[in-house]
Length: 190
Image 1 (cartoon, helix red, strand yellow):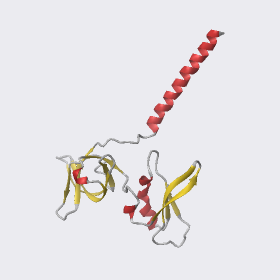
Image 2 (cartoon, helix red, strand yellow; image 1 turned 180 degrees about the vertical axis):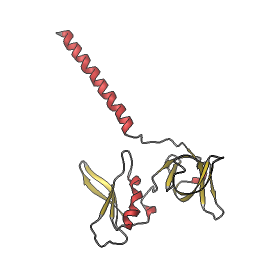
Image 3 (cartoon, rainbow, N blue to C red; image 1 turned 90 degrees about the horizontal axis):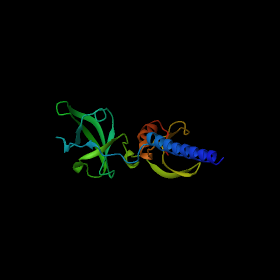
Image 4 (spheres, rainbow, N blue to C red; image 1 turned 135 degrees about the horizontal axis):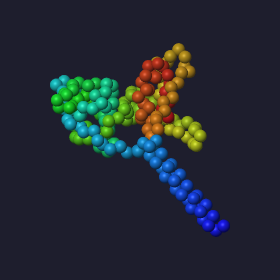
């Protein structure tokens, strides 16, 4: 009887350890790490002939994709929004993009960064009226940015609720606010 109890205890212990290990590894796969490595080389930051700020980056699928993106640099303290591709040099393996704005930090001295789809680091560059509010959720209150439309539509009821993805933050959902504003929607960024 004692052996059977010991075998059951050992079996439960092994099962418990296996469950904890499986849960840990599953979480590592599903939940992104909170700190990304600055692995985007910033080759050069310069002013074009018309004094527009430009950034030269290594050409890759990510850096040559059309659209607006951003570069986080200086361990997350710096943020710049980059826009259209101005030139690409296949021989040098580089792409040059227009810098739309630098929200924080000194991009001209940055040598590495992180490429991101977060076009806005804060709500302020959007240029729309924004209020900090709190809304009740299941386990307390959630901080929310509320944007009221600059031009009211015929129907004052449409709202857009912007929610960031797993492991993201509110700034990741700001990208859709200008579109919702053009449609006359009030936006909540949770």
